[in-house]
Image (cartoon, rainbow, N blue to C red; front, side, top):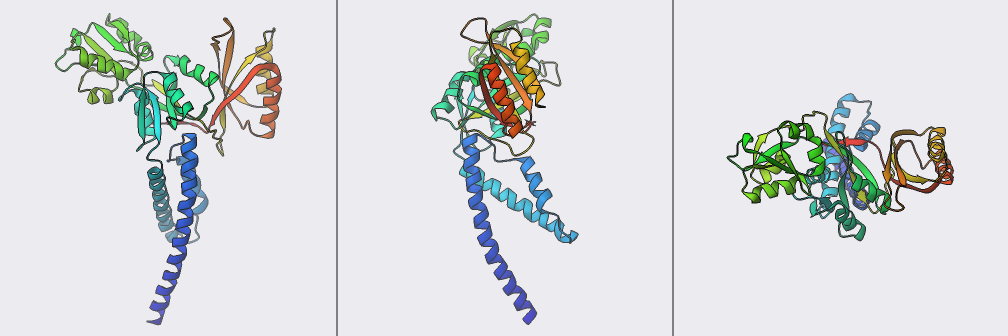
Amino acid sequence: MDNLENARKEINDIDKQMMDLFIRRMKAAENIAQYKKERGLPVYDPAREEQIFNRHSQLDDKVLEEYYRLFLKDTIDISKQYQSRLNAGLRIAYSGVEGAYANIAAKKIFPDSSYVSFTAFDKAYQAVESGECDCCVLPIENSYAGEVGQVIDLLYEGPLFLNGIYSLKIVHNLIGLKGTAKNDIRKVISHPQALAQCRPYIEDNNLTTINAASTAAAAVTVKESGDKTLAAIASEETASIYDLEILERGVNKSDTNATKFAVLSRAEYIPEHDNKFIMMFTVKQVAGALLKAINVISKYGFNMQALRSRPMKEPAWQYYFYVEAEGDDKSQLGQIMLSELSAECEKLKVVGHYSEVVKLN
């Protein structure tokens, strides 16, 4: 009996210590939640969870290790639930209406948040800039149609930081009014990017195209038109939201079609590991200026994964350059590289950092 009472007393003492430690841990989680809110980071961070498991779940007693991993998982899940509750009021801006691919991406990245619709990319961007929203989710590139130039220009011109890139697989469907036959369709409406991604299908079926502000806005137009010769190109989710019928699935005809979405916020985020960064610059108007800039980047061992040019609004016929690079630009070597590169450029701007492109599907 003494042994039982002693064991229970020890458990009571341990439980009191665990309660104190639990409170400390959750207070730390509050700070993490605030940090993530300011930088537009999702609560769920699979890479960080894996680090915690690998670092803290190795026990000599393998039977206890099995149960400790369960304990650790439950603790992490509770922490995520608490952070989600604290950030339940997070306001996410996107361009389009409910059901647009940006809306779908926003819901996958930031579940349990508020999603605020805007009619254009720049309006969603400005909502974060002004503080009306906490962050925005905007498309920057499609694997089939290429970069989204309007958003890239916003990155170059505006003050927001890019703090994450997420890849969403795109499946475009031909959707129309209920009771419509596919052969009835003569016109198709969608966002210009979606129309570009479905160009072969559109041409094969001799369809006239109409531009819309987003794929979901196109669905709204079809719903309100009452026109059975008009169809939208949009997602399955959009068809369900607006009570439309899918006339043909997968009209983009590409199994690898995906769009990269960037999360932008007012505060900068620097990942702990696997750093990648995006920078933009203009070069001096002299022969070989671009080559000199590229040589500076490569000289210090920074791998350029992408290099693209974009026309500047002013002055005419001049360009800025967009670079996605691997490496730690905050390291001593990175700072030397940026300093040298700055000397070769008229303007140099590091837009943001991310650890990897996260697949949302």
